[in-house]
Image (cartoon, helix red, strand yellow):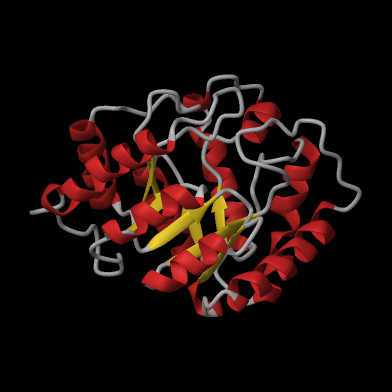
Length: 268
């Protein structure tokens, strides 16, 4: 899953409000091996206020309406790649989701933690898949002091509840993806434990997406403050996640991630 940020305050510094530049980035990621393009119009950073619903929708619309033409002439990296890439929208407010899903979005990457059934119902209405991310509280609000006695046990109980909510809203279980929410309402040791024990989440029998790219936990372990310098640590996290059952990896550097996954497959 390649990350495309249509904003000017992404934590990794790769966001842009220039739609042409965002489209070119998405096309490049597609040709580098991305099976999914994850488009976000608002930074998830907790030290930034939420943008207006109308502005978020405007950014999405500008990208999504131009995407089919931007992909013209592009070719997949190999025969195993999903083509054309699945188009994902990274957003969480139902007011935005309702307007964005009909614009060709196949997958809602919802970092909101599904506090109610609305986004699941909206996905069911248009036949989109839904990612449920583990976190606590409202997005874009700091949760630096969240403490977990048993982060994996709490996560399993959380997903039990949210999967039941989503299926009750009309989504088939086959349309769900789970995300352990690395760095969201978790401290360094919590994140490391999630990486070590994420195979426990295979009990839900749905795909597991792991957002491994340039995360704060990598910077904490390696002593690297600049997110763009964390790509080697990201590859290590890719290897750990794949070994423990991850089916989708959300990354900035698609080329490096594709090579890592290809090599891991060859090694068996």
